[in-house]
Amino acid sequence: MQLSVWTYEGPPHVGAMRVATAMEGMHYVLHAPQGDTYADLLFTMIERRGKRPPVTYTTFQARDLGKDTAQLFQDAARDALDRFKPQALMVGASCTAELIQDDPAGLAEAMQLDCPVIPLELPSYQRKENWGAAESFYQVVRHLADQTVRPRGGPVALVNILGPAALGFRHRDDVIEVRKILDALGIEVNMVAPLGASPNDIRRIGAADFNIVLYPEIGEEAARWLEKTFSQPAIRNVPIGVGATREFIRAVAALAGADPAAALDDDGSRMPWWSRSVDSTYLTGKRVFIFGDATHAVAAARIAHEELGFAVCGLGCYNREFARDVRDAAKRYGIEPLITDDHLEVEEAIAAASPELVLGTQMERHIAKRLGLPCAVISAPVHVQDFPARHSPQMGFEGANVIFDSWVHPLVMGLEEHLLTMFRDDFEFSDGAGASHLHGHGAQVAVPLAEPANDAELAALWTAEAERELKKIPFFVRGKARRNTEAFAAEQGRGAIDLATLYDAKAHYGR
Image (cartoon, rainbow, N blue to C red; front, side, top):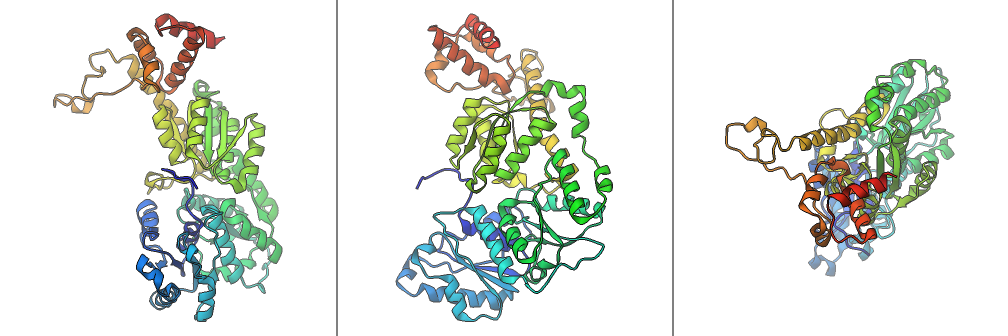
């Protein structure tokens, strides 16, 4: 086991929380000690939900371990049933409670409760959050679906949207965009699940003609079971990016027997226009490093390569269950995939690649900040700022607009920063000048523009004149220029990095 400051995924019972919290009329009884009760923090503070998550904890303490902790679980289950009156109950154990082996599933079954119980066996020390969400959703569907229900047929196709969950990256907004596409195609939605679905809704999940798997990390396992049990085919095209959205529309229309023209004509994305414009040329070929969950990372690599003209210099994911998808994508770009859940390994890879843009999770945002690189967040795990109050999807044509803004703006702002650097000696823009909006109030704002050296000894090698010249290089490539110059100086055996060394290194790497 490895201690870490950051983790890309929580334990699997957090995935179960995400499914329970996404649903209506569902409750989750979690056998957990004091200290594992952090669901409120996740959903009300980070995702900013307007109500508390439907989770009841047994909250046993150290002094309870000498008593009957199984009785604590049964009491908590009865209290939850009486207080919340859910349509169904999910029961399971946290990673710590798993060690005392009380078997919440067996205890709940022995209680003969008045509502359906979905037992969850989530091996906390072998699996992680996304797997836990997928397994929990699969168990909910398998236990609650009425297997006598069959697709209704008829002239209007009926579809299930599978995968959106609580604490998902822009899931709420993505569903809105996908519904718009389905409306344009004349297709009805049977249900979205687990997000917004109730246990009673799940009973009629078999009525749909086919399924759309928006997020394979959560919906794929249930989709395979539905395909086998109800003969429901599944659409697995993820509509992130203009090209992928058009493919998604054609695939859905073909399965539903609909005309795709109406949905294809509703192309409100400005990304294709910009990519064809002269303005895009100064960003063509920018090197981008991508890391996140497999679905978003693969989609981001395609957008970067095909739609924005960037060069993908790094691609990886943290969820090993979908590593094959990332490996296949990496082959298309001629790079080695990075499959890891160690953020320190990701940081080393980013530093070695020296990209001009980083696309990743909140961890990569912090890494990029330390390295002085522009960054945009494309995948969970994310912080509160990536759950905006405004409509901000990733999917569909509007999602392509959001992606265009969030990826291109950091690079454009980098150019603006470079212009400010060029004028740093001007009386109005110098480092010692106050902010323009505080002019005349005596406020002084120091703006550190020089990138700190990675090693004190290397920093000492730089002459003052060379350091001043280095500051004239745009900050988003300054780190790469510094590293190249230091490597060149070491290779040439030069005792100091002066102005001549800086120019010689530039000429060397320019060849």
